[in-house]
Image 1: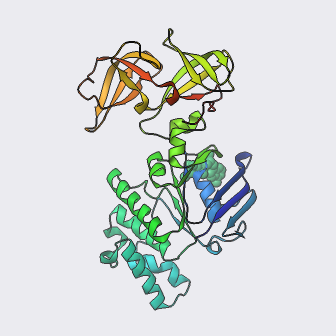
Image 2: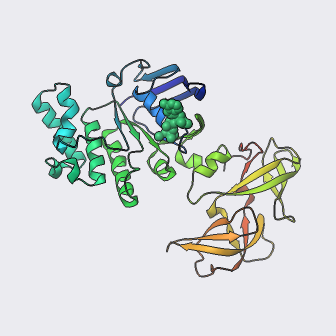
Image 3: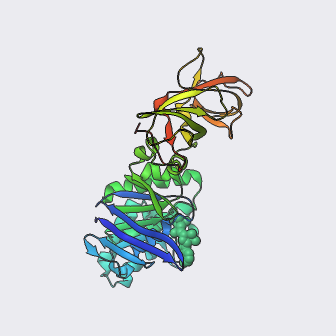
Length: 366
Ligand code: ADP
Ligand code: MG
């Protein structure tokens, strides 16, 4: 277990500045997930912590020790990659033992650690097999075993489940969660998959183009996204964005007109906006209510059901309201939802996220 601290981190590739003055403190035993789209800098950040990539400037500390210029092997870390990088000519036992043997650890101690890892990862029956005789999930467990036996202070994972099919990914996610609980180790995990981030993380670092967009607990990013990027990235199905413009500003509230619904004026709590400003309203699919009465409160949108995904327990209806894109609505009213059904949607104003013309949140926490 160890804390990891990054201070004033810069990373340039030639003339391209990827990170400029990044700060991040990870607590001992914490599970932190770096999430963001492809190319946002997740792997680079992880590889700088691992020592596989040099920083341009700044300081990296692990367990209070400056490791900025230390070799990867001197940092007390172990890394698990997307492609398992197993030695094909060695059996599972040999793969897990490899680094310990290389470090000339006594044979009985190697054996103890390999068997320990095999037990934790349920690989005991597979120790004699070669990687070619394993499924994808089993190979990834071997790769994790190889990391566990080194008893690292910090585990680093770079998209470890991306090569697995969906059901196996869910299963491995639960295993990694259990592993974290059992070992109590600090873990840093990179993924582009927001579901993995939401389910695994104590805290999420949402990255875009080398900048931390938000750092917080999963619920926080979901319910109070700092900006339109985080709102759009976290959550599945995605949040709906409505275009709007500010008509009136009074104290901490604004009157807005929702584009495409010309008669609709809505009063929202938001600050720092000016009259005429083009803004975006973020509305999660579960925040819409299918109205039945007349003139309900909240943003009122009329449309019809274009299509619906019925998942058994819930239905996602895709509503054509003649806006830029279809609106996604989560509903339990399965029977009422048919293609072509006319619907009225309302949203309590306090459940709406307001983002200014730069995409920055300007409504209070929900
Ligand atoms: P992610 O893991 O989030 O997909 P990366 O950290 O791999 O992103 O890459 C972040 C950005 O840095 C990308 O735009 C990528 O093209 C650039 N980059 C990564 N490695 C190099 C390199 N060795 N030389 C130049 N640019 C690089
Ligand atoms: Mg990557």
